[in-house]
Length: 337
Image (cartoon, rainbow, N blue to C red; front, side):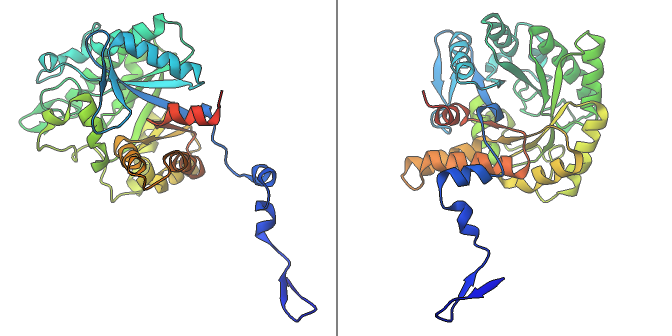
């Protein structure tokens, strides 16, 4: 409804700007809130001692030897970040065609998990389940006659999950995208006495070009060569298919689901949350991090502002939490000392 002024003009009776006029009012009517509780920090482990090794394509991100990794995770825990996700940069000498190192209780991942647990840090540990860090071909499953085979890979993935649970991880996060792997892993964990270990499935993981810097960080890019993962990761053109993938993982026993990548797939996050109403997470992947960091470094964008805005976008889309390499910086900004 509009009212006429004495000068003959029209006054709008509804003024959307009234609620935006002051800081306190904007805070009071804000629809979504971003807190440290929403953040999960991905971290990279490497061999050695006293090693802090920069990842060239991810400015500000490092690979850490186990001793340094514990120190870094302690910083994250002190900042209030509730969980970290570990990814190992496995030494080339330990990689094989079938990725047997994934089942070694003394592998880099398991040693990192145990070291963090022994430090008694108040932080959850999420462990990636896939074979690509351990195989010479860089694929997430076993390869037979040039094909990434599904059913034979499931046994390896389930054994890998049990080894990581035995090391002390709190959440198993299968990122391999093999059909049926959630049910297979859940049964294996339960049979081994790890009923309490949660599963966060990479339920809708797309065959994305945004993963490049991550593959640099874990050393799988060279192994993959000119190969790709399109026979098992999702086609970026598909949306309905994501709902089928998520429904299958829920039916097989996952506790939480994830959409990966993040910002290019906000529509998928929204559809998943509205359809299933289960804990839903987004992964702001390495390519997203690298783009924003590079633009900020060149002075083209306000780095902190766009970082926080991007994280809020995930919350607005329906994500309950975000895996992001910005987690520590975001925590510092939200909880300044």
